[in-house]
Amino acid sequence: AASKIKSVIVLGASGGFGTLFSQVLAKDGIVVRGISRKGTPRADATFTDYLSADPCNPNEEVLERVRSASVIVSCVPPGPCIRALEALAPHMSKGAMFTDVLSVKSGICDAYIALQDKFPHIELVSTHPMFAPAAGWKGMNTAVITIRGGEISSEFTRLIETWGSQTIAMGSGQEHDTVTAAVQNATHSALISFGLCLGKIGYDAEMAARIATPPHKALIGIINRMANINEPDTYWDIQTDNPNSDEVWAKLEEAVGEVHAAVKAKDREKFCDIISGFKPLLEKGKLEGHEPPAY
Image (cartoon, rainbow, N blue to C red; front, side):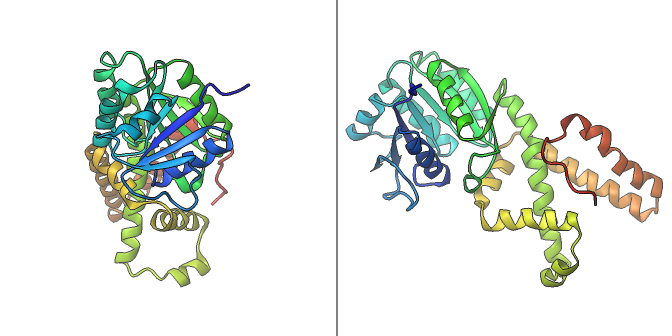
């Protein structure tokens, strides 16, 4: 069946997610139009057309595109995202959808809720692809928070699933940020601290690679990806913007201290109990198809 989505505008089109959206939407035969304050798209982008303009202060060329768009996808930071919504929504067609790809949702969802009565003619959905753009959609998860849904948001969710991503509906920005405090903040905090620790103890990467254990290989692979593929600013935004970040850091410091205290006290029972405690913590959330090797 033909898609109800005929034309998509991507704001912040010069970045990684803007480029990724251009690629998958163009393959689906959808007109995908980039708008960015930066003058040129990336070489691997496949936009139908690309306009260098400020969506927060739109000129007539921007508004002409907005009037015919089924969807506007914002790939810009929270402040410009909200300003763009306020500037563009009055010109969006009835039933069109505005969405974003921000990593932290409490603030943006609160803004959508505050503005939904002002713009009753449009659908408002906040999406979070739970991966870096370089990874692509296939096999990845995408969180979806619907403030006001409809035909276009349902079709957009279906499109994401055809790209190979599983979509997960979440009830609110607050729910999202509570879960991602563990999935992203705690995970990234531990990994960044691990990488920093290696540098402080004089890590010999060449020798370590020759004798590495499976857990070490796994962690080195992840921090290598963090350093070489992903944008460090993404991790910064997650750590600074998630309202639960301070609590996560406090608990991480507490956890490291608790393990260290058991080691210093030579308390074997306490140390083993900590590790054994992971089993009941994790047994309900096994990741299908991601069972680790026996270490």
